[in-house]
Length: 104
Image (cartoon, rainbow, N blue to C red; front, side, top):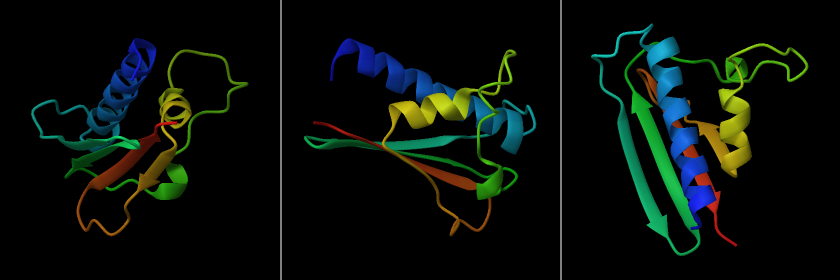
C-alpha cells in the first residue's frame, strides 16, 4: 500500500472508533473496542466490535454533504476509503462493523 492509502485507512479506522465512543458508548472512553484485521494480497479486512448501544443500520449514514458545518462526515470518509462498509446485524449485543479495502 502506498503511504496515502495507509494514512486514509488509519484515519477511517480512527473515525469509526471515535463513532463507537461517541454513539455506542456515549462518551465513555474506558470501554473496550476490539479491532481485528487481516491483510491478504487482494484485500485488507477490518472488523471493529463494541458492546455498546446497538446502531440501527438505517441510521448509519453521514450528514447531507450540502449541510456545511463541522463534524458528521466520518461515515462519508470511511465509505470513500473502504470498498465494503457493512454493519453485521447478527451481533446480539453491541455492534460489529466490517470494512474491506480491495487492492488492484
